[in-house]
Length: 586
Image (cartoon, rainbow, N blue to C red; front, top):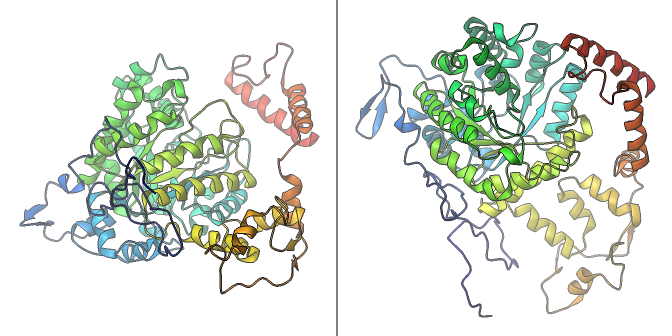
């Protein structure tokens, strides 16, 4: 075959360890550059910002000295954080474990990426003494997925959140954030840390304002709360220190204003006091608390866009510049940093957003929510966002914060958590394959071989959710034979290809099909999954919507707990009372 153009091969690693009978040319990504700024990266579209020429090595503590090619700490210095250990050339047990889990990185590479600030190991020393299994976030590693959980003032409990934590980890969450704003926040956080094998993150400002107005927040409360959560074992904090007074002028014409809870609270504080963001002015003090326990930063994007109409605007980009400054200041204090990103971003702007952060934050890992690529599908935002998340990871994001079907409409429950995790494992894995991370395609190829051999048992054993796939198969045809219910025997292209002697397809000496084998009966759990497929019927959805409307809406057409109708305290009281009525009616 002769094409009138060349394949755009650039020297990327092959994402599969076993290329026998595989005919794909492999990844079109850049060559692997572990140890440099382009480890597992996409080619830049013309006009993209180039990588920063700086790393964490350019932002050393002022009392360290350069001795030849190495840095020397002050006499008597004892390293506390993974970053400080890496700067001294030390490989910690956590780095060893990360290399073991990643598979394609050596402990020395992990250490060097941590030292450069391109990789973090969120592992509070308190949590390390419990069940935490160290992992890494950075573009040299595989793409990670975070699940947001947490009780709200109107739903869930500590026990339910711990159960959702275990469920999220079961379905692939690499980290979990406790975003509780209701119930016993302290007890929920402690229970999740004690139960978790994955890093736990929080947004500490939520705890800082329990039982008080944001306007009363002071420096003592900020530092006391951070220290308490660090002592509990929280592995990373989201702190919205990048929202500055001078940025607020850019927000006034936005279609949806500030959608970050932390960002909106701190904007209100600044307007009330006429002062700069206290998280920004206290940054070095905050770093000192975090370094003591090796809590990592997830520097919050308080001005992220809440809709496509506000994406990549002046407010967002002004804050991103400040996040770069805060990254430099945290590195000088020896604290590990990742940076949070948007949000809601049109597909064509995602690459720019990823690569602008890469430049401004000197390669610090980027942790993004979605982004959603359209705003018109509430109820399906796990899909609209995982499309954007795949692009984001391919273009440089290191961790993806999942979105569930409940995004924008309610608190996720158990099945919503699973749906979000699965969607984002698809996004993360797809990006890893495209970037050419060694071994990323191994399981895909194993399933393809099983599929070609019509080996149903192997397919379901290798599948991410084999029980669900098996249930769908057995719903229509409860025998394992050389076709499925999609095409039937005579039309099965896979069976026909397998039968063609000249083809390699399906020739698996380890698997010889005998007679058709009847499957085990569907389990009650599988039957329940199939019956719930599609969730509620349209009639049920309408019935519930009208039932809710009848209970909470007044004659004017607005809910009687709406803030336009009643004062805030009355709204809360009405909300609680109406929820009890609804629960009783269910």
